[in-house]
Image (cartoon, rainbow, N blue to C red):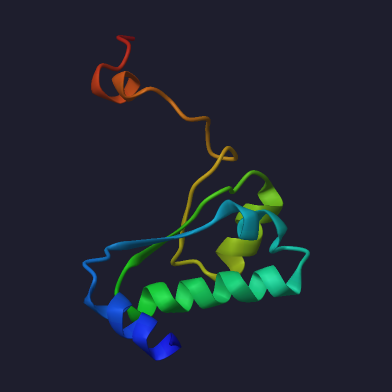
Length: 94
């Protein structure tokens, strides 16, 4: 079963793999979730995909990921809150 799943994954046009926030939130203090983060990073790299960590909410999350996986893009409330698309398309004049 697993070899079939990975064989199918290889054929998909995947350009980005995201690490779910539930793993990111607990990875700094939970070795099992830290290992899951590591596995997702390795799978993404093996597939040649960009890896994004969702749910980076604290300095501890950012530090944990940056120290172990500096190639991973970080995303979450630590960097800013979600904004409407209009904010980017029509930014306010200064």
